[in-house]
Amino acid sequence: MHRIISQGGVQCEASNSVEVKLLSSQTYAIFRFAVVLALLWTWPAQAEKTLRVAVNALPPFLGHPFASTARPTVFTTGAIYDGLIKFDGDGTLMPWLATEWKNVDERTWRFTLRDNVVFSNGSPLTSDSIVAAVEWLTSDASMRDGVRGEIQFLNSARRIDRLTAEITTTYPVPNMPNYMGSLIMVDAPRFRELGRQGYAEAPVGTGPFKVETWKATSISMTANLTSWHAPKLDRLEIIAVPDISGRAQGLLSGRIDIAVGLGPDERMSVEAGGAVSKAWLDPSVAAISFVTVHGGPLADARVRQALNYAVNKSAIIENLFQGLTTPATQGVSHQAFGFNPNLEPYPYDPEKAKALLKDSGYPDGFSFVFLTQTGLGSGTLVFQQVAADLARVGVTMEVRQLPAAAYLNTILRDPTHGGAGAHSTIWPAWPIFDALRPLLMHSCRRAPAWHCDENIQPKIEEALVEWDPVKGLKARHELMAYTRDTAPAIFLYESPEFSGLSPKVTGYKQMHGYINYHEIDLID
Image (cartoon, rainbow, N blue to C red; front, side, top):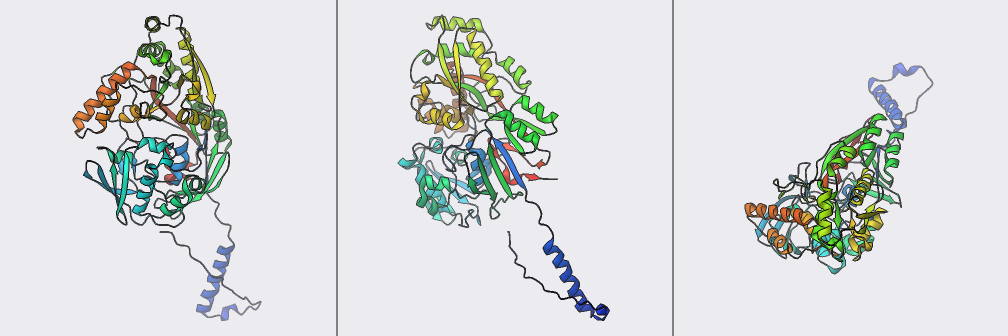
């Protein structure tokens, strides 16, 4: 609880007389208190604690709460909003804005909200926020929202009482709570009044910070002192620095406190410069995801297998990541439910790659365009090395870099995918830590889809509604084996992530793209 205490001024008139000794003890005490208070009143205020975080880009859709669960969007929205649940670093489901949930029947779930939570504008959090979020995500207006694609099984929601609501789904979802981190809570009356664009320009959430100004390359926020998890900091600035070396230099020069999305080379340089580096494995698989829906060579599974054999993943890991990760065996990381431990990575075998290309009708190879984002640092070096490996088997991969906003719009919203044959979209286990998540992302369900395999889609749908965990796990293992063999992507490695910190920063963690802003502090 935060209270603002208003203190009135205390007037004290001192005499030039030396008769101070004649003052009563009570009067003297009052006099001394007034002097101390006057000193405190004029003492310089403690400097505000402002955390400056450099990221590769700001959210392309401003503060729209349902735009995306991907980075860089969540680097910003995670400071403003909260979902119903959260995962810890090990992928364990935790209560967040929802403290309880119950499965009422196959298509109905009941969620109870945390009490005494208010939005940054003072409005109380009630079950109407659940209803408003579901109303939006089931409306025609949300068809292009990223979160709509993540939880497209929503059907309706109804209020039970002030803190309780029931959500119904269009089909059974046995692990429904896992998805509820993406169900962001909004101030319902304000969201209904302003709509998507208005709320994106003036976002209101229950998170630790609230937006003050939003510029083209930076966002300034102030502490949301009424948040149920109020921050230790006074201010937060999120700054877009597309160039990875620029983020590292900003850290070393003291202009920023946290540099997100560094590479192993920058890790070494920031440590040499006296900063602190953090490294961890993200629950995702770095990949070159193929666009197969437009036909051409990449529509043939044999060609895609050939490209997997052609890339020396172990050399990339050793040379660029100092062995901090391992080659991917499938399209999901080891933390996810459904990871198949029996699968092996594609070995480096360029001769086999050439043989497969010949068998599929491309003995002289072919060419395709590969899209990726700017500012990926070591990721860019990885893709250059992949292109060099592919060139050795006769395949030309033209690497094109786009700014983050243009890249996301092209991949997520353009049905032609900019004419590209592949892009750098990862295969993430987050935000639900389930092997079905990346499969759905790279499936016929994606609108617009870049890969649609009608043979596997019914099996994905069956696994989604399987309540028996043993059967569900078996189905996921089979799906991951099928995906590994049909190769809708070049599965590279489980993704290592790096951040650089000022020595003043304490309490920093990044969990699946979400930064724990409320726990971070700055010390002298």
